[in-house]
Image (cartoon, rainbow, N blue to C red; front, side, top):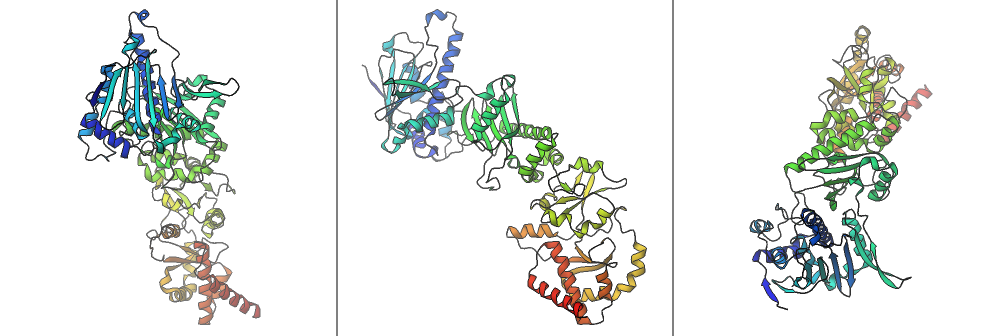
Length: 629
């Protein structure tokens, strides 16, 4: 039998300790690693056979497979791949001189370090050691394709505590069997459904059949059942994939998260080759606004082996609604394959994938009905990109949609391109209003002059909109202007064209203006006459330097302390109420009417009052006096 006992290199001891105690956050990945090694071994055998000049010297079982089964307390993973000689098994499983791991271990600050870059992932001998997380003992039985004598096959045994034993033992077939004696605390990994679930989760698209040994009750015998699909849809030619296949894959990928509105299947060739299959869903996940917990729907594969999902380093957060897969032929991972390393390829991949997604959305926007579905679900998420992605800000701006006074309908949207194509000759601004909801926006007194002049105004009423406008300053050189702001100094289309009328009546209302300033005092910044209103007696505006109402609300909602806004109080001198109170001589009564008008304007502007009961009581008293009179 000629048994030989060897001691692991000191670096391997550290690595084992790291593997078993701290490296992997999820123990089930040991099976992913071993299946990946088996798949590599089979692919190496295929290449080796192709390189032979005289192929008659070797008789191969070309029915390539990875087989998994259980016996008592052990789990066996078997492949008919290239196998290992005695020297190879010692080199691969006992030393690390060739694997690149030595430098990794050398640079470890401590055995708990999880973030050191390494090139060792995917090489047999490192992912292999994850098997000791769940095993008391591991046996490797292998026969190399280079070994014709079945008796020269080799057996490797270790409990992971510093040494291993190697000796010759006959093996009929070429390939490698790995026998794991599962720990008492890890018996779940002997469960049939658990094993099959792990295979489907991580290795479903490996191009080698993965078979599991099942008992057939009818035949009263054990049969091999293929668990994985053994073909990745995304690796097929696009012309050979039907719409139904694309949709079926989406449903399996997302667990039936609605339906895909659009998708893009793309292959990038070259040194860092990758394939992407990206979907736009028609429904938003319930937790998409949970910035701390929500992850995007992208699954990352390396050579068809699932590695991780929800990768923020590849997909910008404002595109987190995307579902799909990205399969790369190389990726810098940390030793546990659980953390992406920062490198040039990752940055290039992020730029490329981002451009691809924005292109999908741009193509989708041609179909208004479909794009409206997308915008309703994800428009507010996309708006975040204006702040997060300065490089693509213009592309994102082209994708924005808004409600507008052009349509009397909350469900119809306009693009900025459409808006500027309808602008009046001489108009040099894009007008918008920000309010709490559509009803408040469309009925705002600020809109009266714009409706009268048939000038289109964009209606914004989502919580994110005021914040968004901090980054959306212009479109194609045309600046945005909030009509909530005081309109002095803007272009002639809106400038109060009845200035003569105001000048003539200025003296008539001078006492009222002074009374308003005296009554409201520090609550307002100024009082001005206006003729831009029709049906409303007063309106509140802010100066260009003042914080807007909606921004104040936004900051307050996240716990920020904000100063009280001092509004400009504009009075409509054509309105019957203003004319009426201008003639009131009773100072106490005049004060009540001024407060009434201020509360009214404040309620319209902010949609709330600190003391609504006071406003109601004041309104009732004033109305009662008018009735009695």
